[in-house]
Amino acid sequence: MEKTYSAPGLTVVEHPLLGRAAVAERAFRCGEVVAIWRGRTITERQALALASDERDQLLQVGDDAFLVNDEELLAADFINHSCEPNCGFTDATTLVAMRDIKTGESVTFDYAMSDTNSFITFDCQCGTPRCRHRMSGSDWRLSQLQERYAGWFAPHVARLIASVTEPVGNQPTRDASLTHD
Ligand SMILES: [Zn+2]
Image 1 (tube, rainbow, N blue to C red):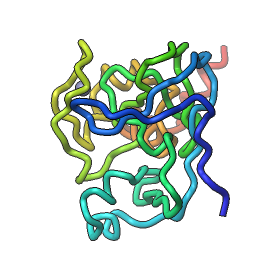
Image 2 (cartoon, rainbow, N blue to C red):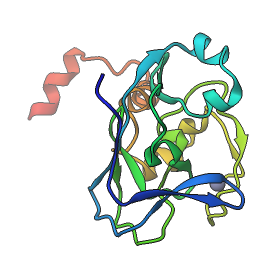
Image 3 (cartoon, rainbow, N blue to C red):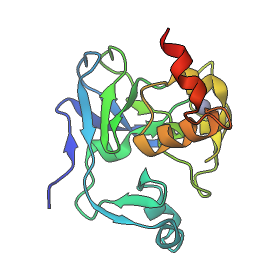
């Protein structure tokens, strides 16, 4: 099985509030791939049967699909949530710097970009000015996050957002031809 990619220069430090946290040991450029997670997938029902510390390591990659890493944990496995993150997704398992990241900065993404499940709820202590204080699996519904992270959501979350933001009854009709003139 292909292994998780954890970018060189990503390291793990002990964080006073967050436990272990992935930190940039060097500068990352906007657009640089930070992590590509690999593993086997399980369902939400199977995820709920795991111990909570095992569940903390999961990455949601589909509506009912979670990636489990059975290999040794890498720095990429300690990328934490932030309400003001510096990374986002370009596909279900690839995390990319959304902006330049300075040496010493924590490398983070907003779990609302990937998580729509029932068990992700936690009190956030990211300490950023935009902190929501409570992270939940329904945060993808927040319009300010949908705007801020447009293009950076994992595909299954982007689909979910599109499905609830499209006007009801927005199907092709005979009127569609009128838009061409
Ligand atoms: Zn926060």
